[in-house]
Length: 115
Image (tube, rainbow, N blue to C red):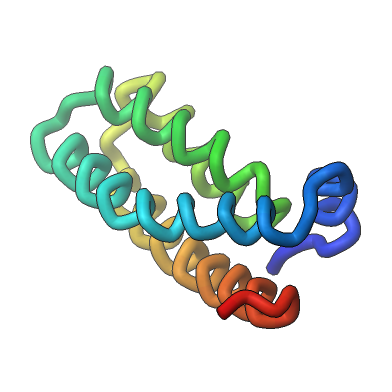
C-alpha cells in the first residue's frame, strides 16, 4: 500500500500532469521489466537479474509502497548473492505486490483527474 504522505513529499515539486506522466511511464515499462526478470530467472542470468531487479527497485521506490520496495530489494539482493533458492517465490510475491501498486496508482491518477 502506498504511503501517501511519503508519496506527496516525494512529488511535492511536480504538478499533477507530470506525476500522471511518471505513472504512465511506469505502466508502459512494467510488462517489459517483468518479462526481462522472468527470462533472467529462467536462464539463471544473475548478472542481468541484478541489473533489472535493481532498476525495478529504483522505479518502485518513487511510489513509496513499502512492500513492493522490500520485495524488489530482496530480489536484487538474491541476484547479487546468486541465490536461486526461493527466487521464484520472491518474484511471484513481487509481481502480486506490483499489481496492487499498479491498481493504486491507477486510482491515484483518477483522483488527480487523469483521463
